[in-house]
Length: 411
Image (cartoon, rainbow, N blue to C red):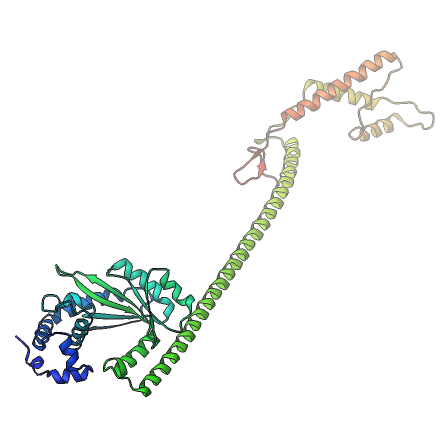
């Protein structure tokens, strides 16, 4: 059943709109009624095509570097124009309701628009990762494009198409199968400036196949301006990337300097603490020695308490008796004559400070006197040794202070 709005399309109006002649239509060997039936069939499937195209758009929008997406399901009149053009180029193929969907690739067409042309590579990788691509990928380039800019396309096996009017794009035909039926979708990558020029040129010239000289000249001028704007945009993009990298490098260097400063301050603090600990250890050692000496002296004087008192041994008593006897002996002097009492007092005062002396009696022989001196020395050494052995032990408490166990407090 042909929709009412499609039945109103007149063959003459259709041919005039798309600059076709009756001879072209006759050469295509297409029945106008067949075209209308195809148009009606496609309109009945438009909702399904629209759902498929919307699903692909959602996937494409997730790709990195995608700025905008332009999407459409082909209008019926344009579909008929493409079928007629296809039949003229392929007269051996008979177009009908069973095969028209397979013959036309852009029943669903999507333009993916990055801000910068150089971003196409990121989108290209995502398309290959997510979709199956039919045939070869096509790269449309300008006639004036440098060989270096087109080499990246030929290196990847793209089919290179030189466009004299300046049209640029990278074209894919992908397939998707949300159900049992597979659909083909035409996807193009064009920068925002290329898309702007292509949209204006398509509206002014391509759609109605206008070849007016003034329109052509303005379109070419606009194309050059779009190309220059694209190059400036690439320059801005590159400069921004450079500045971002420079700022990042500066931030990393500042962070490194800050970390080194923090580390240096920590090392200074550790060094200061080590010096302080060293001074405290030296001071504690000196203080400990002084405390030990003071405690040893106190222990020798304290009578009672928990500090043990050193009892004199028999040898010490004998040595003390001998020292007393010596202090009472008067040594004759030719120079000075002193009374016995004054001599005794002087010897008693000097006794604690001077070394013990052995006084020879007139009746002692030299050998006997020498034996007595040796005996006194032996007894003196034994006494000193016993005093050292009787000194109380010195220990270190929980606070690092040295003390004598159970010693009475000092006053």
